[in-house]
View 1 (cartoon, rainbow, N blue to C red):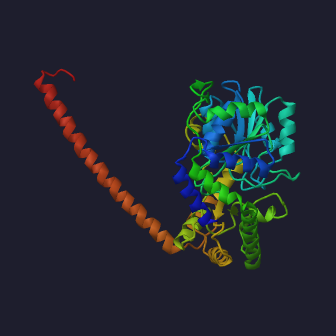
View 2 (view 1 turned 120 degrees about the vertical axis):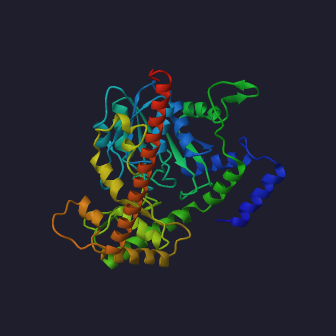
View 3 (view 1 turned 60 degrees about the horizontal axis):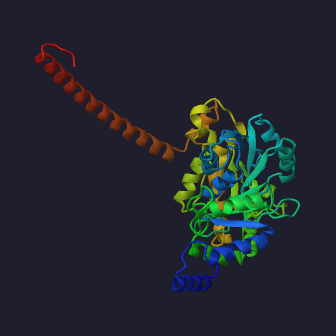
Length: 431
């Protein structure tokens, strides 16, 4: 990151006092993105969540129509569908890639389907050709949530941003390419671009002229300037993330850590994958649960994170109508996936320390949670230090509930007595 260059940009913004309202840095960012991705139109917006809603609105889909999307993704994807008066239909995903394809979409297709909203996850492209053919054959729209995947390419070599009727990228601070906060919408459709342009600025198309619905979804100049500086080094950034994924893979193999599936290893041969995330699956034969691994890593100052738990179909407001829906692959991934540190500040020595910790954890005694969740019938040894912590916590919780119950009983007795006295004073009339 060119810190000095960015600070000069901030000085320029302060000098010109053009802070927002589609200023020169935002315009330059959009033009640069179009040139880099070789796409016709790009719109910088305040975040990817509003970008998803804008993209859906721009298609003018039939109200109440069904939109098929993965249950294994971030909640914003589903919320955008609801916001636009559409109905999300959650499908399962492929166990190897974690992406959806024609098989998963076909299982959820109905006469009410109006669109597929596919997600390009972890920096890897979906089967864009298969999904395109499916959408065309069934006369439905195809859109992409590519929040994770700026700089990624499809197997044909074309950058993501050129597929479906439109795509959305996130520029949140957690992303490989970011602007602190922000999003991008890309499309090769002139009609969709014409609808999108005023939508991010209250529907304004000219001086005192409002032509459509809109809101304030503009990207500020400071955010745009930061993104531009990052875009100058995007190829180096992608290479760095790929190298980190290779290092994790090499060290995991050298240490022979059982019970962990390394997602990145499966896709190192995919040139178009950016490996924007390092994604492991803590499987049943690992002695600890995924959540216990995360807790122990954090105890050692390693920020690991689970993703998309517990699955969109188990989140509100969707779970109420989907309580009987079973999506086995998604549910397994929600219990097993953890994401490990990567990025420009992560050194090889950091990765070595993380893998050393995982190897150490692999030699732990099976936890009591693993015993219960795995339905193991034979006796197992237990990590007594962690078990003692859980016992102490449950005892404290029991005492608190006992105190609360006693307090409630006292209050109830007092109120019942008062009610009786008031009733008697009124001649026995019921209140």
